[in-house]
Image (cartoon, rainbow, N blue to C red; front, top):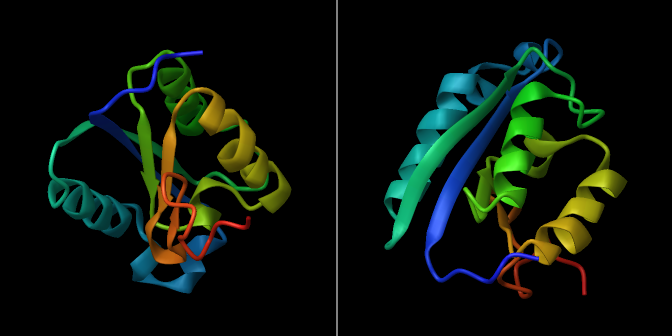
Length: 131
C-alpha cells in the first residue's frame, strides 16, 4: 500500500462511446476535458498530471486502454486523485464501479471525484457515497 499523500496529483478520465454520440455535444470528449481541466485548475494545490481518454469505447467493462493506463498510474503512485465528469464516464457497470470507489481506490489512497454525481471519496457526506 502506498503512503497517503497531502498533494493532489490529478488524472482526469474522459470517455465517449459510439452510443453516447447520439446524446449530444455535452458528452463530447473535448467538452469533458474542458470541464475537468477547469475544475482541476480551480483547486488549490492540485496538479494535472495526465489526461486519460477512451474515445469510442463502451463503459460496460474496464478493458479500455485509457482506463487501464490510468489505473496503472494510480497504483504506481503517479496520480493520487482521479476526476471524471460523472460515474457513467468511468464505467456503466455500477457494481464494478463501486468496487473501485469503495475498496480498490481506498487501498491505494486514491481520491475519486465524479463532479456531476457529487461523488468525492474523501468526503463521506457527498451525496453519491452510501454509508
